[in-house]
Image 1 (tube, rainbow, N blue to C red):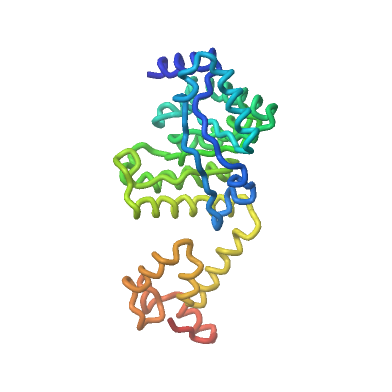
Image 2 (image 1 turned 45 degrees about the vertical axis):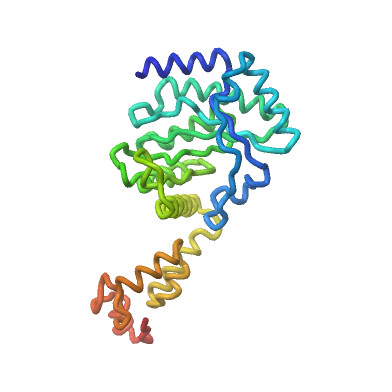
Length: 287
């Protein structure tokens, strides 16, 4: 399998065939919204992949034409690695790395043509290779913005891949990836329903915010600090309002807690905040 992947990658390299191309309106990729968890980035034009270019024997001439169109209409080209790992065992194998070299050349050509370009990356990467993967992409692809597909950090999480992807996305974003992709619980199993899509998006937003915190981005820590203060004050409504998913937080508060007690459902009458307030003589705060 590894030999086949490398053979295909070399074939791609020898023809300089762009592995996969997508196009986005440039204003949708404002750098200020890349990892801002309060501003979802709209993305259009689904991947057209090799289906457009592979049918043309003169692949680089076709790529040049794509760049002309992108330049004319002010859109951003997104190049994805067709040899990205399909499982953890493929991560950072020869095929993936070989193709990154090709993509780096395509990035160079796009920039020379005056076209903004980004790179989309792997979907299956073990924890210990996440930082190396991002670093390698940044080096080979001339620092182009990186969009990772999750990535999921274990292949056994079927039914919970949105959690696995959030772990990989948080570490990848902390390591330097500018975009992370939401993954649903139905990944690898079937098509997601509306609730699974929503949960996947929220999980990705949590991952992005965790990376913002780790990188010290302005405003990220303040959000957490305000919620922590609301928790200390037993201000349940403010906690709900500040939660990344207020609707779900409100539902859980109403269905899983007794509104007649000061503490939450977890601690009840043994609520540490309530007990400390009593011993410090501070004002008692009720729900």
